[in-house]
Amino acid sequence: MRTVKAQDEHRADQSIFLQSQDSAPLSPSSPNNTAGDICAFLGKNVHFKGIISYQGTIQIDGLFDGEIQTDGVVLVGEGAELKANVTAGTIVSKGMITGDIWAKEKLILQAPSVIVGDVTTPTFSIEEGALVDGNLTMGQDAHEVERESALRAVHSSEQFAVKQMVV
Image 1: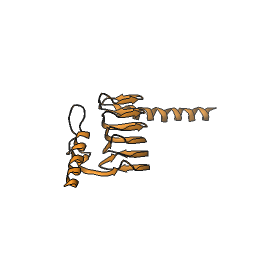
Image 2: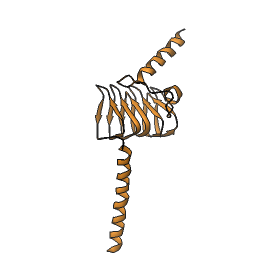
Image 3: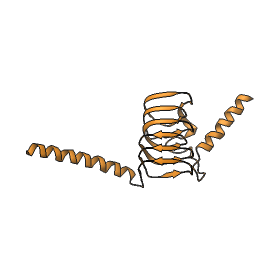
Image 4: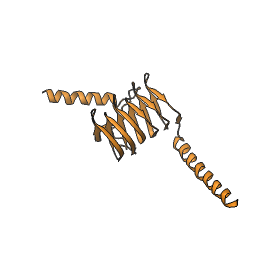
C-alpha cells in the first residue's frame, strides 16, 4: 500500500508540475509527446555531463551539464540545475538553468525557477517568484530573429573574405 501511495503522490506532483500559472496543463495529445510519455528521467542525486538529443519528454531533477536538443518537452524539476544550452519544443521549469534557451513552442517558468542566459521563444509564461537574468526575444518571429542573425553573420564573413581578396 505504501508503494501505491508514493506512485499516486508522484502522479499528483507531476500534474501540478505540468500546469502553467493559468492552470492550463500541457495536453497529452500534443505533437511533442508530453509527460505522459516521459522517455528519460534524470533523478535528484544524478549528475550527467554530455549532449542529450531525443524525441518525446525528459524530466530532469538532478544536475545536468552539456546541451539538450529536441523538438519534444523538457521538464526541469525544483532543485534541478542545468548548465546547458537548451533547444526544445516546450520547456517547463521549476529549477535553475544557466545557458541559452530556445523554446520553439513555449517556455513556462514556475517559481522558484531561475534562468541565467538568453531566452528565445514565441510564447512565454512566468509565475511570480521565478527569475530571468538575460535577454528575452519573443513573438511569432522568435526563430526568424535567430535565422536573420545567422544570415547576417554569414553575409558579414563573405564581405570580409571579398575585402581580403581585393587588397
